[in-house]
Image 1: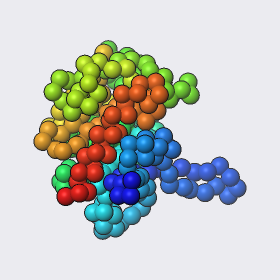
Image 2 (image 1 turned 180 degrees about the vertical axis):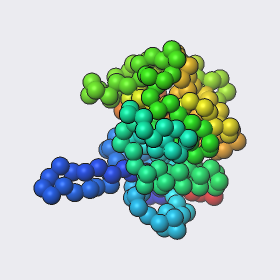
Image 3 (image 1 turned 45 degrees about the horizontal axis):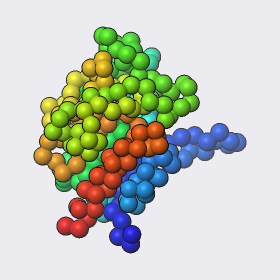
Image 4 (image 1 turned 90 degrees about the vertical axis):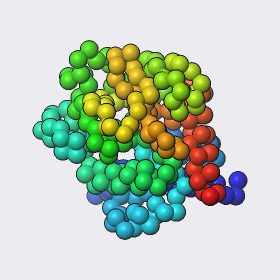
Amino acid sequence: MSNRPLIGCATYRKTVDQVPPIEVYGLMPAYIQAVLAAGGLPVLIPLGLSTENLQALFARLDGVLIPGGGDVEPAQYGGNNDDPTVRDVDGLRDRSELTLIRHALRTDTPLLAICRGLQIFNVALGGSLWEDIHSQMPGAMRHDYLENGRRDLLTHEVSLQPGSLIHNILGADHIPVNSLHHQGIRALAPDLWATATAPDGLIEAVEVAGHPFALGVQWHPENILQAEPRMSCLFEQFVAAADELGRR
């Protein structure tokens, strides 16, 4: 494919443990591989760009992917910054992703938000989060399976809303997913539609009605493409929507 749609992938920063330590911007390869396999060409968006440069880069993209990672700063949604369960907050990342999400919604650019991505998608539109599902959400089941090292473990099913984009893409009323998060949607943003839920009622997918493709999922589809092959359809439809935008 000579004219693959350009998919801008937000990045995060990590410190490499060496002497002296160095800071890098990056993204787990599973996201990149999933976009490539679906026919897209991933472009990593570095942190620290000015608003002007971020807008200039965004104008060349056909789609935007917001990945998982650390917690959204609670101050962004009126939460408790002193909550001891909150971890790996990066205000620079929050600001970059909030800008990208709002640009994508304003310009009808395809948007796929994954795990933390779904959470900041909700925050960008005025929603709030549980700082910690286990300690705050009444009747919550376990959602944080990070410590077992298995990102491809299918831990529970989600129920999909008939007639929704996610339901149409996956072609099922229920589908098994992995679960690698300790935060989640508390108050849903007014402009979002909850289109999948976990057995305990936690919102697992959201979308914007009327947008060509603005979808967030709480699980990590890029890690379960072998365990649940239907997840490849999610990336394929995202890239197809981006390709259509690029041809306009």
